[in-house]
Image (cartoon, rainbow, N blue to C red):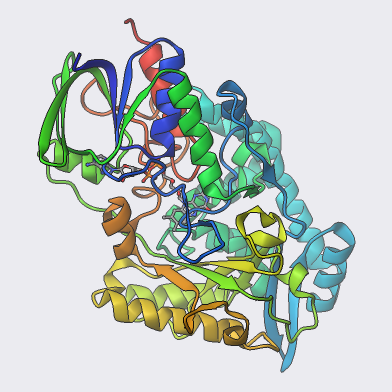
Length: 502
Ligand SMILES: Cc1cc2nc3c(=O)[nH]c(=O)nc-3n(C[C@H](O)[C@H](O)[C@H](O)COP(=O)(O)OP(=O)(O)OC[C@H]3O[C@@H](n4cnc5c(N)ncnc54)[C@H](O)[C@@H]3O)c2cc1C
């Protein structure tokens, strides 16, 4: 039978979530994925022997515990022992800001800023954010609330100041009026700039910030034990066990929908297959959906570099902090407020920042199951403010940026990073992905990791997954509230289908 109740275009993690919910509710579901594997950007890979790296996405915050419980996912998301470390050179002295346990953080703020005042402001700011997160997180799995109801919720849980700081005034104003230290401002700001090429004066940074601090009501970014491939493996199991059919190596080339019926055409090898459906769920980026519907869309801009590195050992730092502490959490490189804004200004004008800002973390300090050797470590770097337009010579720019990032890291190290890199046949174990690489490998237009700019978690009804046609819904990152590894878009699209008569 070449008819299914629902055909899901693309086999990313969100598509698998949608397929699992719908199949569990008794719908016949077909997932069609162009690559020879599912998971999209939520996968592990082994570019070097003895390691299974989270190749693209690497930390989980937005995946609601409710989805994990509903689908019976056997996942371990492990907390990191340190939240962040920011190495800096101040007055010629190598030092840094450590955000770890209460005593360490208090001491670190005091040493860096000269008093306890900045840390008091930090605690007050994040206490408000935390109250907002607890109130807002459950709404992400409900029909789209109105702006007024979100405002009432945030104001009653966290107060008017938090509403203004996050939803009304640019992050630049929030940060410069709340904090005095350039590094502290920068550490807070980075949550607004992940995968988002924007100045901190731009409200797009606020929206990115919001989603980075409300996941599961805590905003904590946890390590998926076994790597990101473990998340996709569990979702695949859940979808298959519920009865969903998944075809891989099958590129959707055409989607026709008229509101009542639908047809999806995919190409598998030399064969072209047509499938009829009641609903089509799009797990691909809106610009890809436009293309297969025969429409012209505007591709979004992606703006990051992802680097994965295998190390024989961790490097020691000039500031004297142990590498086990420095790299366990988010290691902020050249990410003070001023450096972030300068990197944005340069990159927007078409230049590569000399010291590109980025953040690193070491997966193996929290979970050693991804490496075979008892001494190997991984480092993951996510570089900011590197728009797709800078990569006209993709290979040369990728190599140059890797060089600049490693040089940026070296400024804080006693042991040059080159001495710590694992090698194969004399070649260092380093792999990097530019926005253009993501577009080529994952069909993410512009290399935008969220399929487009993030939108506020409110609107005018529905589930935030609707399109211009009633039986075509978005179940991927491009849905409202859909960015990141969350499954939220998949859940919400499934709920929108299940809310309608069969
Ligand atoms: C480098 C990088 C780092 C990131 N880091 C994090 C992180 O640490 N934490 C986090 O939460 N998020 C992170 N993200 C974002 C997150 O990974 C994505 O937002 C999320 O995985 C998107 O999931 P999705 O299922 O919506 O879509 P995708 O993962 O994009 O999946 C879409 C699928 O559709 C397929 N497809 C495309 N076109 C077609 C077609 N015509 N026919 C059939 N199939 C098609 C693609 O091959 C792909 O498998 C990162 C992303 C990247 C790229």
